[in-house]
Length: 350
Picture 1 (cartoon, helix red, strand yellow):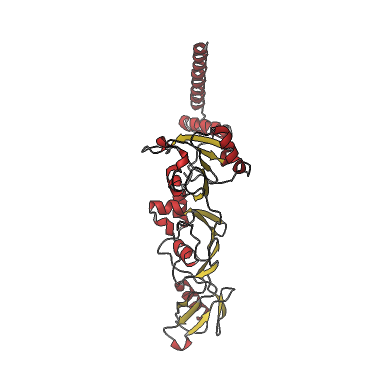
Picture 2 (cartoon, rainbow, N blue to C red):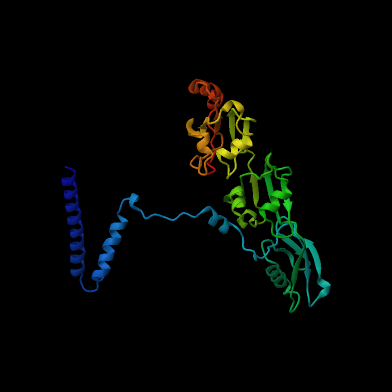
């Protein structure tokens, strides 16, 4: 029966293909003078067919990788500085040194000069600002030129918020970088001294998440990507952890990093206790997956590739049972408080 259906479907498919070809050929041959050629008409038929095709047949689109997103987000290394409110500038006039002056760009982006009055120079490069100032004074002076220098950077700042010691605005006299901002803001490290897993950068309507641990682990220079003036960096306060319970030396919460494995987590918990026996069946409870439990023997875990297939998530519970106890009743009794606390929404780290 299956073979008969397959043969029938193949025949129908061949008939449809043949019919489409005949329609295209007839349309090409019947094209009147001045109309598109046969090849062009066939292309038109195909185009019309594609336009009327169901939405689920749309061509696949390529997605931009997180690394490429960061590369596009980072300004170029040679990007020229633009003036901003709060910058102190010095204006020189080579042909008329007596006109030299200094000033601070106001919140409205303007400076005020004799005769010329208020001039908007914010968001202009030094060269462009000099040309605009000279143009404003050209009605009063012949062949005048102007040069602009920044004597103090008052607008080149970013804002750091979140889980840091010193939140607020941080000023720079050069292009700020992410790690420098985090360092100067006194970022709160974990108990083991590591940086937070991620942070988020707001730039106008753009929002970019930065995987700090992942970039640092791979040695990517994008971990210290260049920022722009007025960027806002937020460091989430929630740390990703897993809970180790049962027969271990130091039960409790253990920080979850990108390179964390079941073996490393047990090591940070001090290793197995004496009551665990020689080969306990370790249980991993995934709270983010509705309490799904995975089992693995300790001896299998200690093999070179043991446990590599187990992905850990924030909120997971690793339980080491006592040797010789009734597994089901004892385990449920120990884990019940954790399983009834509600699931934790977290992103898989591996």
